[in-house]
Picture 1 (cartoon, rainbow, N blue to C red):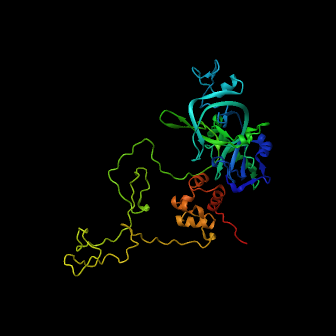
Picture 2: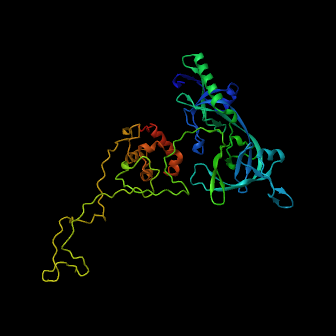
Picture 3: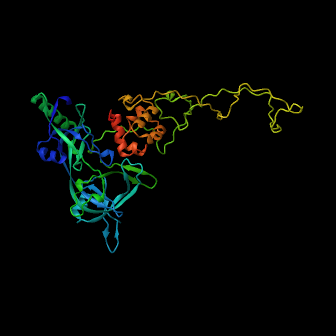
Length: 453
């Protein structure tokens, strides 16, 4: 599929307008013309994203509130978690001898509201937020059920349909704008129908759409709920990570299910090297020190924490001082006294500089090689991959973001690493605010501020 040959509708649709006008003519192909930036980066769709929409996906969900007032949304057909319903025998309910039940069975047997307990000890925290603290998820009060609608499809990247990456677009993305593909610009209807038929066959054979589920448990902000007319499907949720708590460890619990659909957002995660927890690393027979980072091997998985110790810059050693006695305790302040025969005069030490105030203990730092500075932001190349850490920091100065220079220097963010950053990393690791994150990402993609007066 050559995207340059595709003819798009002149009219931009909102998400709701598109569903109203085209839900009876699915599948079709859309292009996002105005993206959506959610509360979390995982819940964002960028402009220019091409998607083949297959259908409108409906899901029945139930809201549940914790004792602390947190409001969750769970799919009724949740299969990965079971719940216990306390039996009311006397003033206090008990969970003894209760059989775990699915949400679907509970809703069929009980009238809402009803209190349930998770059959596993669970904790949760906001997805991708390192500052978020783990909270317990145990007792829930099931309150209301509602219908959630999503657009369901697959992305098209460089003309190729990614049939192994099913995605959804939820209806709460109200700011989203899109255009619809109406054929080829040259009017070749047969070629266009052949392409659409090929995509349909690929989805039917490889898309596995019949077994698609969406088992994400979501956290809703109660401030967005209208108590008179609650419309949960229009509330932008907070995605969470679940963990199962055992006696001595915490195990991540998949919060999506085995075959799932998920919001489309391709992000290259910042490259990290981590040691495996509770796994002893074998000792290496020998360790070689590297003179510079260029000498380090590309495969660094087996390096221990103290493997690489960069050598200190070499210092020209001083020659020994043979004339100075080893025992210095009896030397006076004025070392050489001509009239005293008991004090030996010392010969000068030619190798030691006369001015030694700026010498450090065992180190003399060589001068850093000079890096050519850019005169203005327009001198910065569009491709930043060859920039040094210092040159990246110069770019921050041009963008009036000098307050982040120390963080970039400490993290050694050079031109290559710039292309691996995403908003979550920039906020949590580099301390940047949302506006500056967007500004820097646009700068990375070629944008330069218009400073002409």
